[in-house]
Length: 182
Image (cartoon, rainbow, N blue to C red; front, side):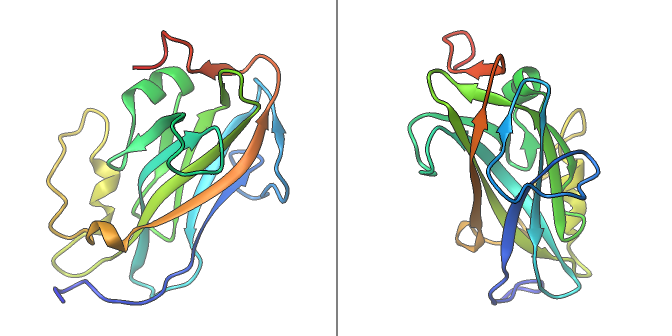
C-alpha cells in the first residue's frame, strides 16, 4: 500500500434535500416541478477523521439501472459537465473537502419519461502529508486542471450511490430533444 491508502468498508449515501440549507431530507420520492432545484449531497456516513468524500461522476437515467441507455452526465472528472452547466445549471458547492459533497441542478426530465434516477460515483480519500484530497475542489472552471491520479484510489475503490425515482412534473427542462443531446 502506498501512503494514504488503506482498506476498509466505508458506508456512503446520497440524499436529496428540500432546499439549499441542506437541513431537511426528502424521506420519500418527491414530485418536483419547474420551480424546484435538486439539492444533492453524497455523504461518508462513518470513517476515519482524515477521510473525505470525492464525487467523481454523476449522471441521470430514465430507469433505476445505472447503465441505462438513456442517460445524462451532470458531473464528470470531479467537475460540472459543460453541457449540464448550460442546460441544467449544475453547480458543485463542495467536493473533496469533508465527509459531505454537495451539488445542485435545475430539475429536468427525459423525453417521454416521467421519472429520473440520479447516480454518483464517489470515492473516499485520506488527507496525508503528501497528498491533499481537497485539490479536486480547485480543478474546475477556469482554473487549470492538475494531474490528480497520483493520490486517488484506483477505479475499483469507487462506490456508486443512487436515488430515485424522482417524478418531474409540468414544464421542466426536457433532456433528449435532438438539440440537447450530443
